[in-house]
Length: 135
Image 1 (cartoon, rainbow, N blue to C red):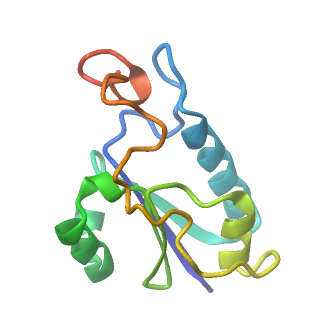
Image 2 (cartoon, rainbow, N blue to C red; image 1 turned 30 degrees about the vertical axis):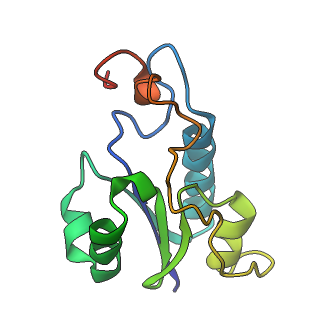
């Protein structure tokens, strides 16, 4: 079975629904991952804040972090191959990666390698707002 792993920046909540502002991309990926799991896909999310070991035990992810750093996250890896950086793949892409939908090209969703964070500005404070960026 195809293994899909999504490595995310340090988040205070994986759903994106915390604090006064919600992050639509987190809400969407949470629903997409839940749907794929319901369909039997081998898909997992790893948060840098709560699961840092996952970032150090996979050679693909470790190399990415050493080269690009957390600014390039989220990183999506399918069977050890990087398929997306800097943005979450769509549900259709995830279904295709899992072999549950139409084949999608195995090309990065975004080529900037995360030079900007997913729609957040430096002043937004992350998914929870505020100065600390955590709930």
